[in-house]
Amino acid sequence: MSIQTENIQKLVERREKARLGGGAKRIEAQHAKGKMTARERLALLLDEGSFEEYDMFVQHRCTNFGMDKEHFDGDGVVTGCGTIDGRLVYVFAQDFTVSGGSLSKTMSEKICKVMDMAVRNGAPVIGLNDSGGARIQEGIDALAGYGEIFERNILASGVIPQISGIFGPCAGGAVYSPALTDFTLMVKNTSYMFLTGPAVVKSVTGEDVTQEDLGGASVHSSKSGVAHFAASSEEEGIATIKDLLSFLPQNNMEEAPRVETSDPVSRVEDLLNEIVPDNPNKAYDMYKVIGCIVDDGRFLEVHKDYAKNIIVGFAHMGGRSVGIVANQPAILAGALDINASRKASRFVRFCDAFNIPLVTLVDVPGFLCGTTQEYGAIITNGAKLLYAYGEATVPKVTVTLRKSYGGAHIVMSCKQLRGDINYAWPSANIAVMGADGAVNVLYAKDIKADPEHASEIFEKKKKEYNDLFSNPYQAAQKGYIDDVIEPRNTRFRVIRALEQLALKKQDIPAKKHDNLPL
Ligand code: HXC
View (cartoon, rainbow, N blue to C red):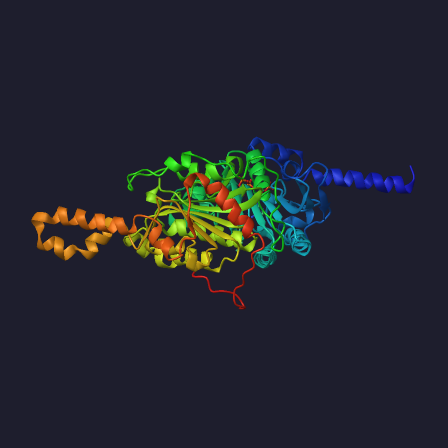
């Protein structure tokens, strides 16, 4: 064998060994937990044969606690780039079989390298996390590594899409990087996110809690809102990440890819003419409206199980990627509360940062009132959504289906927040508040003065109020609504509006950065 052949043989062997990460036994243990390895996940995520790996031979430099005797090529993370549906992405996947995927300084250097490349080359970065947090043996070096990653997450925010998949336990520093990214996906039953695990919680607070109840996918997708997606399996999680990417541009200088659609732009949906019940207190399902107007009824919902009184997600309309924000009258009558405001404002800001037009479907009775909301700062949180819509410069098309009252009317992409095209259905009511509340404020004295005829007065005044405001024409007469449209034509009218706005240019005043109410 020539020296060169021998060298090549050594390379092949070393690569093979590196690909085993922490070794066959630990891979078996990973599989036994129902989890894939880092490499298996990447193989599923990326187009076949597209993975270009970097830093396969990197090793940690720690000498504490016997670590100088324990080296694995790659040091617990697989990094590189590849393509998804032919589009470039940068990736890192933590390998739990090496020191529990814990973060060493060298691991952070590998991750930072691909993050820097992603920003330089204008491509999304996807992190598949499975990590016990800072590598305890490395002390401050591991913490410094997290700092380096966080800083890059922050600088890349709004420049390239950043997506985090949580595919195992993620503790300590391992949760803050995902929290800084645009979207976090968790896998039910096998992934956890918490600052400190159950043992530490017990010792600090005395609370007994399981990993699942402390930071499982269902907790974070429905209670805390930390996770945007909860998948039933790793396969489903990876498929969701790919689906999500199909709606996003590569970076903030580009538009999301246009897709071919066989769904006619001019499709009318008679169902929509009937969907709003005659009784204003009766609910209907906003998902049906979304399903009727988007291409092929396909909608990728974000935060599906969190703050269900507002719906946000991606769809295509006429082949264009759009962000849909819609009140859901079937939950809390569609009222805006703290969580709904936080959820929608984050989504609106993402769409605005990445040139994705916003389509807003309005049926909102107002902000949810009461001490729980006030003590929780509904004022500041509601202001987030107001702020997000007001600063957004992407095309904004709004359709008011039914109620649009008070502050909530303004928040939901009204004309004065630089809404571009504002349509209303004939069933729209645009007013300061609903009739019952208004009559109670305006005629409380009259009603009190004549208790015998109280209900008569109430009904008479309610009718007067409804005659004036229970329609879209007050707003349309003043140009606050651009047109009153037949519900069944909504798809066609929205797509035509988006076409007009395709080259929209709008600025915000130059500033260092804004001061969003946090
Ligand atoms: C070094 C670690 C580690 C860590 C796990 N391992 N976490 N090694 N540093 N942080 C190692 C284990 O020693 C073990 O090594 C292997 O990974 C697998 O771990 P197990 O405990 O056997 O696995 P499992 O039972 O599945 O439990 C996983 C776990 C648990 C829940 C993640 O390991 C755990 O609680 N780890 C510590 C989590 C934590 O508190 N991290 C916070 C760090 S502080 P062997 O050799 O036996 O296979 C932090 C602060 C940063 O991150 C703050 C920045 C803002």
